[in-house]
Length: 130
Image (cartoon, rainbow, N blue to C red):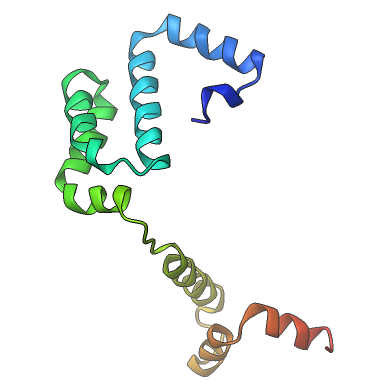
């Protein structure tokens, strides 16, 4: 899904062969690239039109994606339009869940709490005697 201009000549030729061999892949590829453009350039105002195109003449899996996006249209449009991101929060949640899974049944809640609250760079410096 990289921009076409970033593909090597070999990759571009291979993509052309695959697109010529299967019209469904061609349509799915075109829709995926259009969606990637919506995301890269924050063009949420074009999302509804993209969904209509996908529901109309896309391969079945792409129609399913379009239907899922339509179900939560306001949230997806906001995500593709507004400058705010929950990425940092999601990263922290992922870190906490990873720690919890790694420690499951092996230690007390206090140790889990301590590992969550200690910043990774702080704990690394302590281990190295800094």
